[in-house]
Image 1: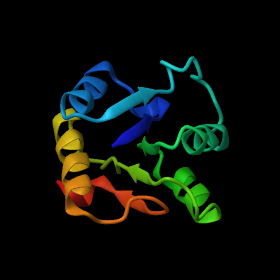
Image 2: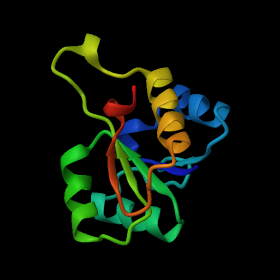
Image 3: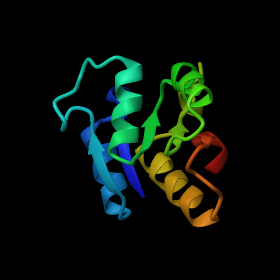
Image 4: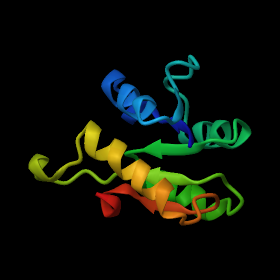
Amino acid sequence: MKILVDEDSQARKQLDVLRGAGHDVVSIAELDRNGSLDPEVFVLAQSSQRVLLTHNVADFHALALACPGHHGVIAIYRDGDPRKNMNYRDIGRAVSKLEASGVLISGQFHVLNHWR
């Protein structure tokens, strides 16, 4: 899967886990775009034909609804209880499960927490 990783999700270890699973991953920092506004990040994902990976669920859900022809958004909810949050490996496995499922990703907003 071709993935653009949002600024809030681009820890080096996360990128390594995703790349280790065979995904074509680029982060906002690697594109020298840290500090970009959410709509700019969304447009960048579309212009580079990448699925957007983010923890910023609310803002990107709204953008995905407003632009139905997008390449897909995969979002991770953070829980108030840190023990319930997904770690880097959980996220990597969830992305792989989602991709392997055959479920349509393009034009969709997926919550990765459901793919644990």
